[in-house]
Amino acid sequence: MEEQALQFITYYENQLEIAKRFVAIRKNKKVSQKKLSILSGVSYASIRRFEKTGDISLASLVKMALALQLYDDLDNLFKNHQEYKSIEEIINDQKD
Image (cartoon, rainbow, N blue to C red; front, side):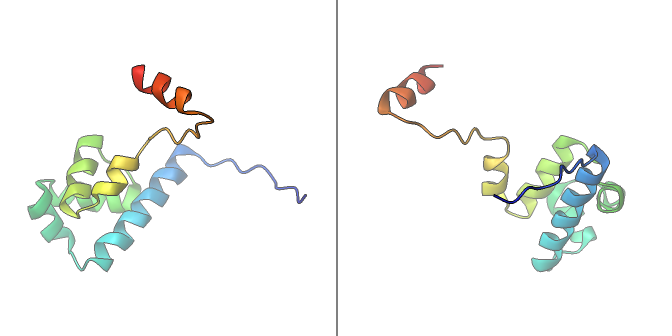
């Protein structure tokens, strides 16, 4: 088995990576920052800041994601991807 070195990513690096992915999606959908501002209700300045620094409120990020029709991406955010071993585990998990 091949060993892998530990990688430590700061929250800031993570923010920048998310912003970079978002920019790629926005551009792929051929939506300008100004048009995204109109569609989402998020200020143009906030969108520009997000794309440069990764800094944005969760509410604004959700508005922008919905404006770009990224419903599945939002739905899967922080989902528990637990694998169940039996039907009983599924039933018990649904009760919680």
